[in-house]
Length: 116
Length: 112
Image 1 (cartoon, rainbow over the protein chains, first blue to last red):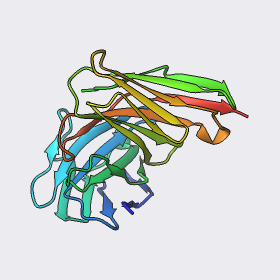
Image 2 (image 1 turned 90 degrees about the vertical axis):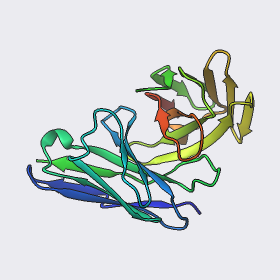
Image 3 (image 1 turned 180 degrees about the vertical axis):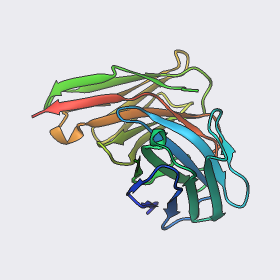
Image 4 (image 1 turned 120 degrees about the vertical axis):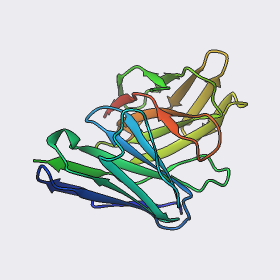
């Protein structure tokens, strides 16, 4: 149980276009989802916390108009990178938690974004 | 801001040896977790230790927590080549919906 999927796993897009990444909890309801960004050989940097039905909470330094997050249901959160630039190229990982006192986060497999 | 700090940043050992990774953090925590990441993949949760616990075991993994020193260690015994991965500690300050902050990680290479 506790499987989180991400789609797509890899995406290449041109500068100036927008890209949407989906994060789904497959067998549980995720009241809270988190979006992370990871540069090569670096740790995960939390971008935002997404609660179902409410606005996401962004970490300091993360542009909310650049990285749009929508958590429309208890099983789906989306991250849209708007007007992507090469510096947005990164590995984006989502995680989900049930919010029922279980502290583990369940991570998706990640999405490799390359902006050309 | 980064909460956990791991050392060493990189560790290379022979198969069969034990691997010890350390993590330090700065603020009070509710629990500390260790994760594993194979290259280019998502994270796998290994073990969680609560702030009122001092030691926890899971298979070949042993985690200790010293809240007075704000540090934790992950010991992998009898390492295998398949243990080659990056290991991250992560801290959580409160409820499950609270954010988890990751340390910079230790890259472990187990040589067959």
